[in-house]
Every structure is written in structure tokens, then in C-alpha cells.
Image (cartoon, rainbow, N blue to C red):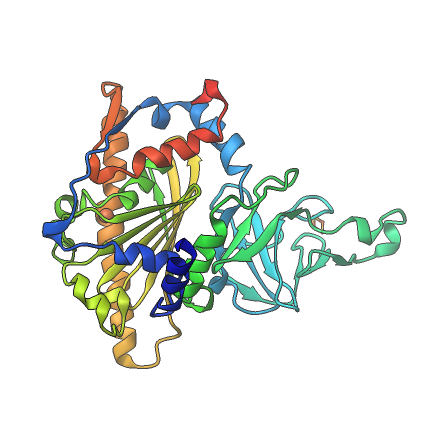
Length: 394
Ligand code: FES
Ligand SMILES: [Fe+2]
């Protein structure tokens, strides 16, 4: 009986969605029928303020699980390389001639100079050190040493770039940040990847990228993207009217999370009909654990990678992804307007709120924070982080 039911669900999944996405969408209710969540949680403010806690998170979480370094779409062609410094580790992402992505430490094996500067993808096929021109292929192999006869003992095959764990999945380039440790993909990542690929994230195009250097703990930046409670309040003058003040459908995908939210114009009856663009009516927000957020919009997706730099500093690497390069003035105008709106809402409201939290808590007077029913996924986010830490660091 159970098997019959699940095969029926699988057969009727519409819109190219995964069965898991469709299951969540089917649970969306009209505002008057939504249940009132009452799950509460709390945390001591030391989880944001303590230096020891920050160091434990870097050591036992960020260096122990694969993290997103960039959307695959930002390194679209074979022969491209992309420096990525935002984690505070000089990374060099490359795509070799077979299209395989690699991640290396962006440092020369001769005398350690950074190889490639900047933060934009470039297509060159190989990288050459600015100091003495040792040259490397996109697969990290050392291919050229000027005046090689003066290094009689150097073996090129032993002097490739220092490589990091790297793979692509769900439209992202994932890396391990510690060259001495090869992290394994965490549970739930396959489902996240399947979901994001069902939306075509792996085939999208980067319209714009923006870096935000914020004076706040990375978890303060993450939390507004895990709850809808603030939308009618913090965003009262911007996007509040597009949403309703009801709980989303929350799904745990291992330590990753998915929020499925009906927008103000969503009606459950719509699911019986053909919908041309689901993203006009339903917003999906993913926590790609531990530090990446994906939010769907009708004509673009937002990807934010939150890169912790200190207990009170976070660099947010924001990407706006669209179906393809703008093919008309109308499309360009729409994308440009959206890119400006994102800066206003995320930059001016969500990120600002995260900085204000840090400022308030720097007083030392607030010892504990509370999460109510409309913030019910924040407690599990902290649970997930803490599951990687030693008991004395939690
Ligand atoms: S440091 Fe790179 S070639 Fe010398
Ligand atoms: Fe927000």
C-alpha cells in the first residue's frame, strides 16, 4: 500500500520538480488554514560573541565539511581560472580542458607568491607566476620553469599546485578548505543538488556579483534567511506586501534546510492547474549547510555564500543568477532593477539587521536570545553546527 502511494506521487510530480519539492508544495495551506507553530528555542549569546567558539567553528566545521566556493556558472568555460579570497584562504578555482573543476591554494610552489590576483574569472588555459614565471596548467600541474637547468634537482611532477578537495554538485563548486584534510559530502547534499538542478541552477548565468564586508558574526547573517517572522516587520517598506505572515513548510535535508513559502498571490487550488512559472507563487529558500543560501524569485535566483572572517566579521559573496544573458532591453532592465532591489533589501535591511544585532550584543548586557514558532528552523541550525563541535566548545 505504501509503495503504491509513493509511486503515484512520483508519477504526478509536475513542473520538473523533485518528488521532495512537490511533497512540500502540496503541504502549503491558505493563511486561514495554516497551523500556528509554537516550538521555542534559545541560545546563550556566547555562541556569537566568543572567540573560542569562533575558532572551534572554523576548525571543526568549516575545515571539516565541503563548503561552496562559487556557483559553477561563475566558471563556465574550460580553461578558466578564478581567484577566490573571501574565506581568508587564497583559493584558485580552475576548469580544465575537459571541463572538470579544481581547487588549489593560489600560491606558487617556487617561493610562495600568489599566482593570480583579482576576483574575476579569466580564460587563459594556464597560469603563470608574476615573480619568476613558473607556469601551471588548469589541472595544477607545473608545466614550465624558466632556466630550468638552474634547478637540477627540481622534479616538475612533484611541484604541482597544492590541491584541495573539489567537486561540483547542484550548480556549485564545493571545496575542502584544509589542504591536509579531505572532507566528505554530508548527508542530504544529494537531495539539495537534485532540487537545485530541477530548477536549472547548474545551467544558469551569473548576471551580477557583489561582495559585502559586514561587521557581524556569520550566524547573525544567516538567521534572517531561516525565518519569515521578520518579513512583515523588517521589510515592511520593501517586500512585505509580496508575502503573508504564515509559516513556511520547512524540510530538513540532513543538516541542510529547505523553506517552501506560498507568496501573497498563492492559492492551494493553483496546484490543480498548469502553472507557467511556479516561482511567481512559491518561494524556495535553501540553507546549503553550513553557510550558503539560495532564494528563488520569478526571474532570478540569489546565491549568498557567507564567509566568516572573524567572530564579528563576515564577507558575503552574493550572486544573482538568471537563465541566460539578457537577450532584450526589457530583460536587461528587469535584471538591473532586480539587482538594485537585492542591494536595497538584503544589503540595506537583512545585513543591516545582522550588524545591528552585533552592535547591540557587543554591550555584553544580553546573555540569551530566543527563537519563537515562526523562527523554528534557527534552533535546528544551531543544533547542526553544534553537532560538529566538541562538547566543551558548544
Ligand atoms: S615565486 Fe613563483 S615563480 Fe618564483
Ligand atoms: Fe529578509
